[in-house]
Image (cartoon, rainbow, N blue to C red; front, side, top):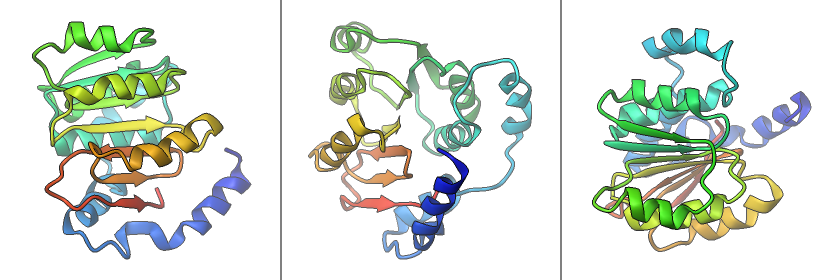
Length: 200
């Protein structure tokens, strides 16, 4: 996304910054202390040298993954996409007990999940630039818990825009956050189902 478009998007979403207008205490806290948190965590400096030698996701997204992992403490995490090796490290550093699996591609997601998650549940799923993202998310759905968190990139691209609109209405999905290029999905129905647009 070029600089002018970034400025335009930021201005358009200006009123959606820092949780303004959000009435849910849970969502407000998550926006303020996780999604839009600007503190420099210890892991950022530790992992920064690796960004120079690895093809990786944008720093902003990797930092978000670290904060989400730190907040939700997932027991398992799965990163799917060609630039996820360092993203896995951010998730693992955010929660040291997380068992994190990094897969550049996943061609048969339903079979893979059936084989590897027979008795397991998905704590965190990050899908980044995977062509078959719809299949992956659908295959992962039977293994969610109320504490699961899914992060999907590219929700503004042509082939994902309509899918994102549909997934927000899925009965299994609870709260969703639209960060423009990134979508965050939660599944805890103890909180009122709601869709939030956030100036990320």
